[in-house]
Structure formats: C-alpha cells, structure tokens
Image (cartoon, rainbow, N blue to C red; front, top):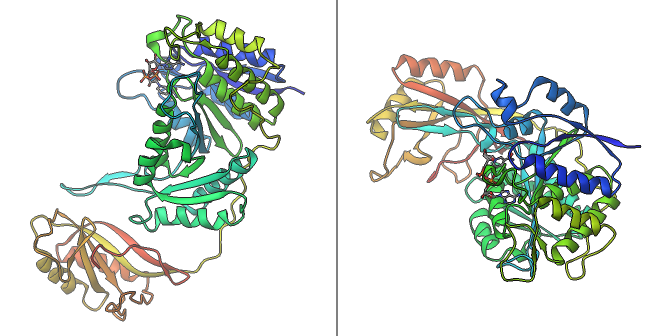
Length: 486
Ligand code: NAD
C-alpha cells in the first residue's frame, strides 16, 4: 500500500529541485502518494506571519512526514522563522545532518570524512526565554531537561546502531555548565553502557570543534546540545565542499521533516543549474524513516554512481577536469538511468530496514526538598560588603545570607576588590542551621513560606529584587551550582 506524505516545494530553486527529486523517487518505484502544500514566501505575503496557511497545517498534521524544499524568508520584521515554528510546534526533537565527502570526484581537503551530527532541536538557549533584568545585565535561559536529553542521546545511539556506525562522540561544556551539560554527558555515559558494540567518547565542545574542523575523518556520529549542534553541523557541512550536497532530517515522535540544508538560492533560481543532491539525500533519509530501505539504497547508489561517472552540476564542477557540466534536469535523468547500478569506488549504501525510533520517557521518582533561595538584586554602585550588611539585617530571624556573587563570581564573604561588579547581584540565602564552612556544605530544608516572607523583608528594606530562584536538593543532591570562588 502506498504511503501518503506531504510535499512542500518551497521557494527559489525549491520547485525545480523538487521536480527533479520526485522524478527519481517515481522512477525508483517508491510507493508514495503526495499531498502538495504551499509554504514560504507566498504564504508570508498572503498575511500568514509564520509562512504557513491554516489549511497547510491540517495536511501537515495528517501525514507522518514532510519533504520540504527551501523557503525564502521575506526581509523585514514581523515574519517568524517557519523552520523554528515547524520544529517547535511538531516536536521535532532531533536534527540529523549527515555530511560526507565524495573524494576524488568532488574537491575536498578531507577525503575520509563521513560525519553525522545529531543535534538536540528544542531546548538549550533556543527556548528563547530572555530578560533584561537590570540596566547593566541581560539574561538568556539555558533549559535542558531529562526527557529532552534522554530522547536525543537514545536517538543518537539507536541511529548509530541501525546505520552500522562504529563510534558516537558527545560534545559538551560540562567543565563549566556542570548541571545542564553535566546532565547531557552523564546521560550519554549511562545510556552508552547499553551499546557496548559502539566506541564512545565525551569531548569538550571547544577542542572538539577545533578537531572536527581540522580532522573530521576521526569522527563518526556526534551528539550534542542545540547551540553547539547548530555551529558544529555548519562546520561539517562547509567541509564537504558544497551546501548543495547535504540533506537533513528533523525527527519527531509522530511527524518528521526532511529538507536540504541550503536555502532557496534566489541568485540561481529558475535557471536549471541548482544541484538537487541535498534534497535527494533528504528524501533518501525520509525513505529510510518510512521503512523503504530498498528504494533508499537503490537511489543512493545511483546517486553515488552518477557523481562517480562525472555528471556534476555547476557548484561542484571543476573546469578542465573530465567531468561533465550538467543542469538540474539532466543530473536527475543521469541518476534515473543509473538506478540498479552501484558505485565502483565510493562505498555502496545499504540502509537498515529498521530505522532508529524514539522511545517513551519515564519520569524517575526523586525526592525534591527546598533548601534555600537565590534572590537577584539590582543595586548600582554598591560595595559588596555594604550590600551584604543590608541583606543580612533584612533577613535576620528568617534565613542566613550565605554568599553574594556578581556575574557568578563570589564577592562576599571575602571577595577581592579587583573583581568588577555590575548592578546585578545574586544573593544566596539558606537555613541558618546550614553548615557552610565545610567544602561540601549541608543544606537543611527550609519552609516554603519563608521565601515570600524574606522577599517582603528585602523589599521593605528598600532592596530591589528582580528575580528569585529556589534552591532544591534532589534525593539529597545539590540542584544548583556553587558560586565561582565559593
Ligand atoms: P542559500 O543556501 O540559499 O545560498 C547560499 C549560496 O549557495 C548561494 O550562492 C547559492 O546559489 C548556493 N546554493 C545553495 N543551494 C544550492 C544548490 N542546491 N545548488 C547550487 N548552489 C546552491 O543561502 P542564502 O543565500 O543565505 O539564503 C537565501 C534564502 O534562503 C533566504 O531567504 C534565507 O532565509 C533562506 N534559507 C532558507 C533555509 C530553509 O528553508 N531551510 C535555509 C537557509 C536559508
């Protein structure tokens, strides 16, 4: 029985590469019916600020996958990014971007590169929760959840296993962000124990990025948080030689979206010169996702053979070489002619019959206890000792002031006069019975009602509180970071 999918040709070169890709899928006998929808520029200009009309939403939510051409985001404010809207609305938690080189047929400095970046797609700094809290200081919340992390890490391991990959590298900054990135690394290590057949490593994102950029051939599957993944997947795509080559998948539990990584290339639109490979690679990932591995492998092998046989679009053609410069249509025809053939030198593709699937999340049972509060205070031109004295006086009989930090650095007690201070202070209050002298102090619980009482007392004392964060223990473990220098 045919499977029904949503097809959105998009803008610029979108329609012509979509026609090319569809001709290849049809020739390969893919059992697919298409519901075509219009998204992008026309929808934006028709007054739909997110680039998609309500009727298109209905189609999109009905079918399990969307094959999407690139779209043009009109210039000017008031237009929301369609990609972000789709990602968040449809719960597309994993962004999967394979980047490989086609040496010696496409010029590259990294002949052996074949990397897949699996990027968390919904959380991290992309939650878009930002505030200006004082005149001096702005904040962006980095949110990392256990279900979000488990889902992406599990998906990366399952993807590696299903696709016969040998190694998974986790990129984090857990030496600095011990709780958020620490959770990511810890989840990776814990789940990794279930995949002993896969080589595993955790690297710090800064040196990891430098190594990916200089020695990409030593990486296989990379799993990482949203922002790092955004950057690292652009680095890997750039290294392959052309943006016209790489496809990507956005995986959700119910609906998934497949698209080229490039944009609508208005500079070459309508001229039959665009490379359809990236959208074709996305379509191949889609076929694997739909359980159509046989057709996916046939198309991928025909594509590799076409590149090997020297049929190259303008973006990868090298004048003077014996490759033949072809347009979009002729390239697609060359792929169709090679269906049933295999590459001679490039590795033959054989996709799995059982694609990676997300698994449901079960929340662990954890005891959560309130043990203090951080009040963030706006105070311009204040000396730390003087501010601390005012805070201590206001808190008397309620909680004990444990420390004051400025931009995360401890400035009281025993701060350094050299530390530069803004008007934004974090003031930590704990139970007066807390032993705060040992290296890992104890945190006895506090009554929840003490927090608003203390807030009222601080306000009464003329202290301007701009925000508070409760401090919790989870099964006795600290759920908050220590101040730098604490
Ligand atoms: P772009 O990727 O469209 O183009 C960058 C360069 O790469 C251009 O020189 C272009 O000609 C070339 N190029 C891109 N795809 C190619 C292909 N398949 N074959 C040959 N050459 C190709 O990026 P841009 O110019 O920054 O953006 C153009 C528009 O696309 C903008 O409106 C942008 O917002 C949008 N965009 C959309 C998506 C998406 O829909 N996922 C992604 C990126 C950019």
